Image 1 (spheres, rainbow, N blue to C red):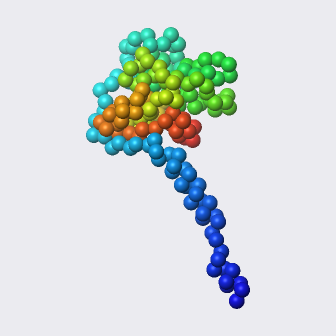
Image 2 (cartoon, rainbow, N blue to C red):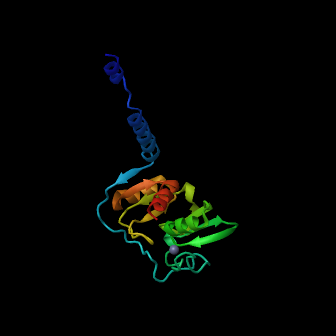
Length: 175
Ligand SMILES: [Zn+2]
């Protein structure tokens, strides 16, 4: 019965490939993702800032038109197509990047709790989905200068700690 014998040693390559792809995906996503359930409280942080200081001399988000000083806690600057861009949120970063079909360079993000401070986005620790109010999205994506600060905020207000690359990929996938 050669035919049944060969059937016994059939290897489900498709399943193995799918399994390996899943493992690869998890190994990319899991290490940096620390999930907090939080207390359900909403942070007592003014966002938008109704009567803001002048954090930036750039008036409005070039994508959506919102006032950058009011939404200073989630603002971005980046280089694309040989000039500097200023937007209110990572949502608007993703929209501008998609329109130009190029990756933004030299991306800087405001520190949520210190809106006067901009840091390199790839050095930031993001908290996604906390009870903090979002910008251009129901799901907030706020930046901290250290993992410890993001985790401390997350312990109180919930959310998942992620990197800029992970957050941008998530936003781009949902556009
Ligand atoms: Zn905007």
